[in-house]
Image (cartoon, rainbow, N blue to C red; front, side, top):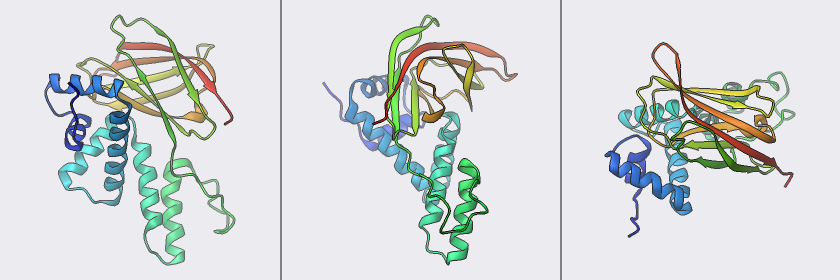
Length: 237
């Protein structure tokens, strides 16, 4: 019988709480239930926005900060903070200085010396597409995976179903069809499954790519965890 998960249960899952059996059941439900997965993403966005605005209690804020660090999603918090600053009522001079400082953290300051009315308006709300990756039990290579990236998609979230690892961190490498690494992301700790890593869509090449996920010990040494080959299709729609 289908279990209707509450927001509290999903939040607990995201923050690594609950028994192994409860977490495994919810992880399975997220794979097969698109509505539940959409609710999880909504909760993530709500909590990140609340964290950016300073609306969470100290313990909650610390837990969600750790979640973002472990899942490699701190860029989302920087964007949310930039938007929170922009939405505050400020005198004109202070407003643009605050937004400039926040956006420099997100994507660099190419428009720093441009006038207020002439600077380009950065897109702060990311449109994300997700790809769930099955557990790589054999630590071989999972193939026959395909990812379609539309023109307006700015982020791609890879969700790795992983087993518990005695690790201090993880490293994800994205290799192009020629075997060269085009993206590398690292995170601290070993998060609960699924391990979610958000990457800029523009930096993911079209064609065949290879995802290499490794666990890191306290000395930075690697232990292979999962390898996936994905066919990436980019469309101008």
